[in-house]
Length: 483
Ligand code: GLN
Image: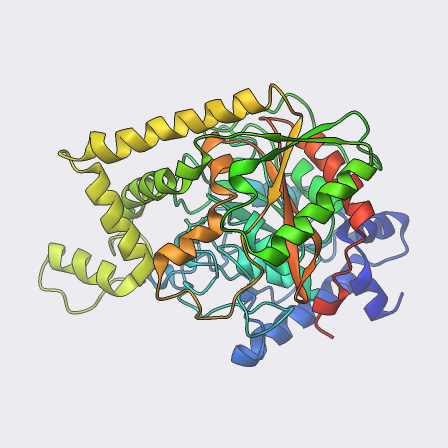
């Protein structure tokens, strides 16, 4: 195979060719390594997808035993601890930090035969929707370099869309896999909370954080997820899902009842996105699904609850970064408290500081009930809304993000405007249920994502429905590939 043909393969197809002996894994790795390194060397002229690129294929020499993932190179979000490799969560405070161990999700993928290609850029501590909050500079959207790739897993999504990595993993706390997948025209899946171990993921908000795949197509997402899941003794909130992840093959949606939550599919969503969404619903009907409207009465309060709960958990999780145990330590301090203060002052960016202050305030004794307690009650209501709605429908459809990719800098001065990106994705995070974003068309030449959500542990049903819709949409992402 020629070099460019190799780059056109999906990851699953590449793994199949490796298994058949028609593709050498080290050739595949070198083809991608060269492209990823070129992006990194290009600095501001490149897309800024990566914070680190592997100097060589660590699996080389073991070609005979590449496992089910066939040595296919994998890009990993910066916040996954990876032994001996910089793992910085996009933050100055962890600059150059090389952990002594590897996150379970990554370790499982490497054991299954993936090869570590690169670490990807992200918003600092996964706080953001545009990858502009990275201490290492922004990532650009390969569809239009003046625009953001979404966030916080923007480096992973842009790398897959641009063909600089065959597939990638990211994390999603309130939308950080699904929203960048939507803005970059790729597939992103946030699994049911607990199905993938959080061990070794640098924490943002532990009751919400969940790892998942970002891929070119739905089959690749299933293949990657199948090797990430499972109970892990190192994460007490992880669990064994009731069924194994299967590769999807459905081409029709006959017999499925799909709900469209009115609260998440109208107001605040831009015209072009709504047009694509309406066309997607028509496609679903043509494939045999019944589409009906449902209600999630508390969903409009999800963002407010999320922006109390996530900062509250973050303020606690980020207390460990004090200049003693990890990463940087500010110079010139007179005594211990001064050293803590200076380290955190210099090491954290503005958004992270904003969240630590919000979270600390929400948890303070006089306000705990008024903010944290109230937000937890809203979270319960949202879970109940989903439970009731899933009594009437099998899956739900919404737009993934309210807009297409926006210009770099357009929302950086207005945090509330930035937070609205997650309007459609945060409710599923609060309820802990799985949701996938697949590209469903273009608006003004930029990709639009369709979100499909299901009850806990419905990943196989979600993947099947996404697969059938993907075939029908026949979305062409080739315009985003870096030549
Ligand atoms: N954009 C949201 C936030 O800033 C979600 C981020 C995420 O899912 N990690 O918190």
